[in-house]
Length: 485
Image (cartoon, rainbow, N blue to C red; front, side):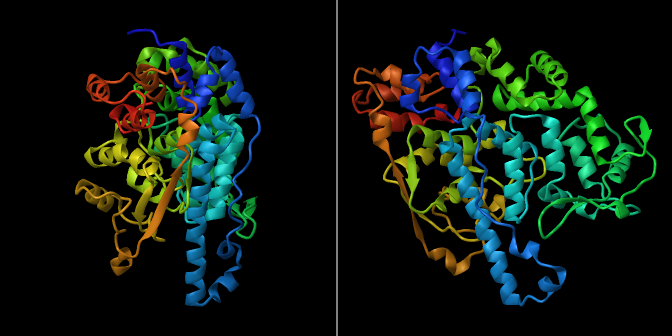
């Protein structure tokens, strides 16, 4: 394989670490060495702003007595407010992904959002969990794991709020091992049962969301976990899981597949795990090691990942800034593309890789840039239960050739006939003004696409007017190659 140019390496770095790069910034970064770019990405992500869209949930903060006293109409209104708050939270983070200056931190927050997958119709709790991911995104993994484990969202999602002595609930104990730390095959069913006993008494105050350890419901008996015996509590279980090098390997393999290549190089993964374990789970040190490695810029890793739907949307908006008169349309796009933030399909999160692409979703992905950047007027039905329908029904409609931006939402009946306009307002001048006058067609192709253009695409582009940059860009953004990053 031909060695990539320095500009292509810079483009690759920003694609993986920052949801892409604008044409203007790519031009301004010419001549800057890679190590200084990595340092800048970490420096600009040293600080951060939390998501602060929703307050403590009204229904959640109510006492049991007040909740029982609510009328049916009052309950309905509070549920509608909760659902609207979830949508507002989604839209606020989507926009933050392509506007926040702490680009690497938001990218890492996105990774941890999938790793610690959680789905609740509890806006404040989900916002709190997202801010935990953001706070520790480049910090210490133990600190983040402990904070996540004690968060109202995870305590409720995995039923640890109901975990009491004599009646232990094993959900959290199982997932903390299978999905968050050592992975399958490195623990037994007995370990799950004993760990569940250690986590008894963990809960949170409904009125404030504050973590509370309820001694009266904690099992003080002796427990045997991963070959060790003692009167363990939840923190002890977490520490013993981190003592296992399998945890470092499990995490490094997942990070490698997310940031480098979904075909893991086990030799490199093992080396990363050794370093990560020795650093006592320093996430920033691990990511610096990855982004500064020669193998990260190997030709086989450049343009080798299928972009997730969120990557696709964020990358488009970083390249061509877009504002939206009706932001609810972004919910439709996320659902149609197969990934809506705060709505993972299950506790394992999104599978990623080739799972992003099938015959129907590919069609929509190829049309998405044109829908967002050409005129940007699209009929939609942003209904309250937009994200509650069955994915299978959505996929069936896509297979029949309907765009999810115009299709009725399942179960809406006559309401689906009422349409609103999703009006996207792309700032084309931001992109076009950053293209040098003497920029050749080949240079433009290289700056838009991370992977090499196929023979078929190059043939299509040959007949186009090289001076019509907008037309050329739209052709590139609508190509299969743009789906890779």
